Length: 250
Image (cartoon, rainbow, N blue to C red):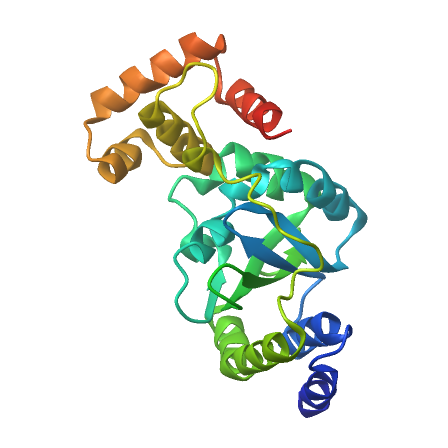
């Protein structure tokens, strides 16, 4: 760990910083794949380091960056972030996450058994997200793994702050306000703003009851919204809704 931190310190203010940051964060944490990206509320994530397996890489540079990132539990957590945070995906995902289209189209397809992430505020707009995953067949990340990653979070956050002071924003490209999540965009295809909120929550994996609680409406009202959404979009399943969502992000 000390050697990786030393290399990180020497890389502050240089192009090698993101690589060294991910290496320092993952030191001592058993994982099969990792990535470092920058979350921004007004644009798709900027991927700075990619140490993924081929199946996961294809998905990341395909559907994920095309818009599915907006359904990620980690992306959602980043929007409310005030301080560095470590979390296993099951700790921040909705109760029905395993039944969501996001889960079925990501974890179930690319062989990821579990994921843990470290989120670090880099500026008022940017959040550093470092993800570490284990493949199907491997054991899940434990609370001890979370504590191990968390033990270095303060130091890593300090390195991020110092690097940004010297070199500016971490994102490797200009971020334009072009692609915010569906909840923040004008509702397409005749959907009302409330219906767009219901779509977002449905695709995240929330149950009708959880959607009702989140929006302070009854379960029956949620079902009425869902029926109207399907009618307006000419669809009959959540899988079709997911494909429509991807099409609107293109």
